[in-house]
Length: 410
Image: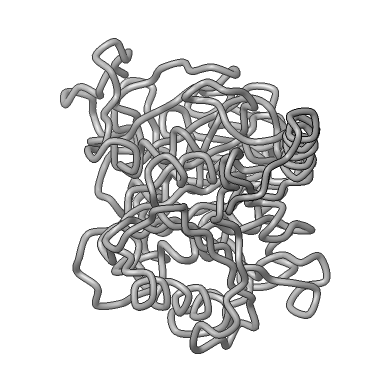
């Protein structure tokens, strides 16, 4: 026989039960009346294979993630770590929405006193060696253990992590389909700590062909397609000066075999200008007034992401635009809208004038301009070094007011 209780006692028991369930829910304990918490979280992978670079691997697989999904490798900047980059960069939002996996390599003070990736050490930036090889091993682990689609692997990073992104794109073009370089530097801009400072704070005098050769030599004999590249640069960045974005543009447009003149230019939110090169092979995002950091844009909009913190600067959500550029949010890779303003292309009738002179003489003659004490060729924006009468270069005219470095030709 079932037990019976007075009506007043039953009411009291029901009230107590309701209060208990409410208390459990407020403490984060899942109950039959509360939605379960999201299970996915950033986890450390204890062993991922060969690790000559002494790095730590973290990964994030969204709830419901299945095999055959893309992978994005995220590389933090100096003084940062994987968890902070995961929390603030905004990439988690789009991983959750589209179901792709994130892998976050982490370095530390044992490798570099400021916990920077060693983008300037040849032992860490050569295919099959050091930190580059460790990151490659993490990708192989994800393909083998998560079922990652090996044809849809991408890399993105900030500052030293951005420079390391360039390293991975150069040394493993057979692994990465695309990449994003935030406040970073060209591959092999430096091969020592001393040279690294020179790169960060001033332009290095190389032609696009010379920059491109550095990438091609990183995996000699490779004949396949090279990755698509997005470059992000704050125009008020005094840690990695804007000349580095121009060098990255010269390097990757040359590697991709497209002109250093943009095919289109348009304005975006946050004081951002987007220049597209070739058939959307290379993008350069320049952000007016932004210093050194990764562009984020906190908010609930579809194109908003991230959390403001040190080196995460509230301007525009770079993760949103990179996810689109990589084709992660809708399948097809977007192209600039028809409203983009085309940049006039050089006419073929312009004579191929070649002039050798000092940087000062080039600027006074209108073939170049100076900014911040440094000289840049008109049109191509090729970096020419200090603005003075001592530095001499050859410039070749390839279009109306468009000059390129041509030291070996003039």
